[in-house]
Length: 290
View 1 (cartoon, helix red, strand yellow):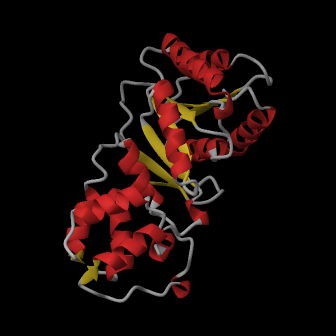
View 2 (spheres, rainbow, N blue to C red; view 1 turned 60 degrees about the horizontal axis):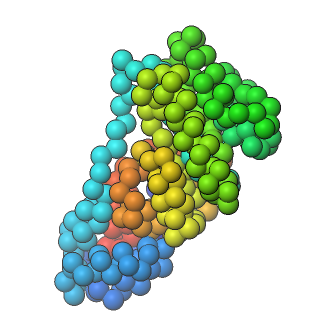
């Protein structure tokens, strides 16, 4: 299931894909099996099917699925807000540092001046990894030693970005959910300090979710949202699975905009999430390509 979803990201070649046969309708039971196989959680599958007749057309299924994405993603950076400060949230191992590099690379390719801040001071490896990416992408970074106050990194990064006329600031944070109380207080402090350095910063708090983690990713999102409020989501590691249905479950459970999809390890392996394109890739797999 969702082989076309992988093909659309350039992960598999056309020769490796067997196209779905063209059909006008699908039986409810077959659709249920396909959605479950694609990693859509059971409760959502039942909710989708409850709204549909016994045999389902492409248009009927599209209308049912599009209702899940009942939110608006704000892609535009306000021209009067420089620098635009983003704080990147997520558990260790979700691909947070690599995603920061991808975002920085994307903004730089758009002609924007970008600075990153190594706010995950709990792990020396996180500081070193982000510093290597900054050097590779030729962008400035504010970093300190392991164990230093992450809020000080936030403050120094934003003030430096203001002084140097940067367009975008991307700040890394720690992701130690196993010490949730301490992490919660640390993140709240980082948010408060960002607002002291620049009014209304951070302007966007983006959560990084591992697309292969299913319900675990959803529980992580709920925990971080309860801590500081999440403005948007980036889903990573979708190059490693054909089970793209996790996106449906995440959108349904969280009602938070999905901004980007990570499809690999290279800096350019990040693409804007397009709801209509994503749904049509699912429908093409079920009903055949239009």
